Image (cartoon, rainbow, N blue to C red; front, side, top):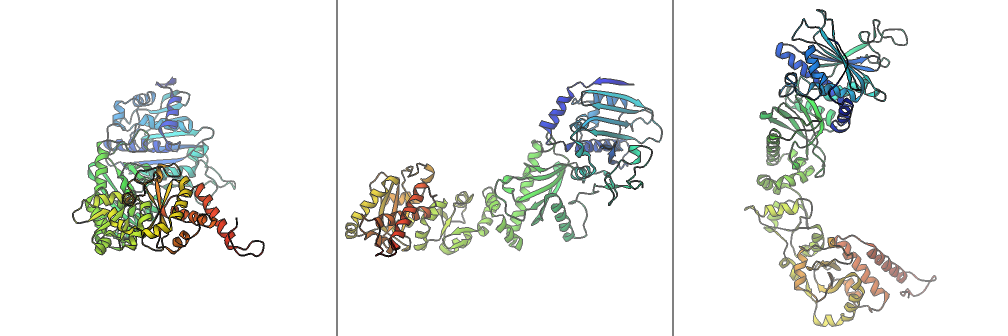
Amino acid sequence: MDEKGSTFQVDLRGIVDLLARHLYSGPNVYLRELLQNGVDAITARRDLEPDHMGQIRIRSWGGHGLEVLDTGIGLTSAEARELLATVGRSSKRDLDLGVGREEFLGQFGIGLLSGFMVADTIELVSRSARDLDAPAVKWTGHDDGHYDLSEVERSADDPVGSVVRILPRRGMEHWMQIDTVVSLATEFGSLLPVEVLVEVPLSGTDAPQPCAESAGDQPAEDPSGSPQPYVWRRISEPELPWDKPYAHSLARREGLARFCEATMGFTPMATINLSVPVTGLTGVAFVIPDAVPPGSGGYHRVYLKQMLLGNRVTGLVPEWAFFVRCAINATGLAPTASREQLYSDDALLATQEALADQLRAWVVDTLSSQSPLAKEFVHTHHLALRSLSLTDDIVLDLAAEVLPFETTEGIHTLREVTDKQGEVIYTESLEEYRRVGAVARAQGILLVNAGYVYDADLMVKLATRPQWKVRPLSSGDISQALNEVEPVRELEIFQQVAAASEMLEPLDIQPVVRCFEPEGLPAMILQDSNGGTGPHGSQELIDEDDVWSEVLEEFAVPNERSRQIIFNDTNPTVRRWLSLDPSTAFFKAGLQSMYVSAVLLSGEPLHSREAEMMNDSLETFLRWGLPSNGGGDGQVGS
């Protein structure tokens, strides 16, 4: 049975381009596909010989190429023709080697042809375990689309299994260098349930050379004339690191920490056992020791049938669980076509729900323990805890007891706030907190800043819990703080207020004088409830839900301007400023300086106009305070 010059029933170059450019993330997966084929073949042989251990051996071949040998089921001539002449079509042999069988990893033909991503030619020699009298099969495929298929005489001593040999194409030699091969084999196959060996030069010798069996009858020699020594390095472990027995819990914790350090690059704060029997999933979740931002990406290390699927697999745990990185192995989950992510189906959905329940249970148990670990977890991952609290009432109640919040009296938990004033009063934005914080503190209100991510939603949800009394700050809480000045005082400062109003008209802001605490706060900016666009023409500067909008309605001065600047008549600096002649440069400089300070206090950014005003006022103060021409009376210049 010789078939020379036969062609594949597809455009092979198109298939290789599809694999390399659109299906796989890079050419490094060629070795993963060859390993998958070997493991599948060994698994199939175990159906015939249940005690067969199986082995995969990888070594250099032909100077720059690679040889991958497995002791699997092997192929007969008919099977080789069916599998290797028609790429991508399911067949009865596919059912034996990969499709529809939980214990298999992939599809043989596609897996073999992935080698064309790095090679021009692939050679396969296979001896079947099903028919020990059948001749061996030799198949040679070329990237131009043709292949040769022939039978080879077989002796009784020839081992059962398959040998794949590939030579790199130009520019791909580095993918078959022994150091790269060891790294790839370790990455993809270190947890495989079969023995995986890579032939490497003995430590301290020169660069690897082909051994005698692959290069000829004579052993390779180093420059001194001595045979090049090689050894077989085992890169696979007999057991999964989270399933292997340990002497005690500390030894297990240390062993898992070493695995996390080697594969994920950090020492975990804690480990969480994971198990989903319905999909054959086991593994651990490693709690990251440092804070990570929301949406930073939940990337996990996933093995399917102990072959690495990927170390950046997404969609395994809910979005709130961004504080963990998981390492799991599953037998009942399916990969996508690229075999680098998990296929979304009912099995994955059930797994996601089970893992979410297990992570949530760990959080609840940890917070309930009030242990040092609980304090460290809250301190480091309070954002993740806030996110989880929005989805679970039990976690919400626990989190409210321990989560830190910014308040007008420092950092406190909501339980501490409730114990001090009987209820939680909060602002919904950072800008509102900055505007009202000093006034609220002066009136003895312990105000919580809920302007950070998740906090406002958390307050709304917590307000529905019967054991908590939570509400947003209202106008009634602080309206009494803004007291009108006496009528006589209004007459005294009428000209100054009118002049300030004229100066601030281009900024679309109205000056108002009131008396309020604290005395040390000279001025603050309030937004009008009409939601004007402000001096910068940006709606983003206006917070229509600001509590000050309601306050302004009570103390409104008829005007069409979008904002007000409230000057504090109890502040000594303001009173001195209001006593100045409004026609002087010093009055204008004082107005500019207090306006810029109020803008900064409100949390708004300084734009070019505010920056110019700040520079003008500073120049005026310097000219007033510094003598001119080496002397003088220190009067304000013209």
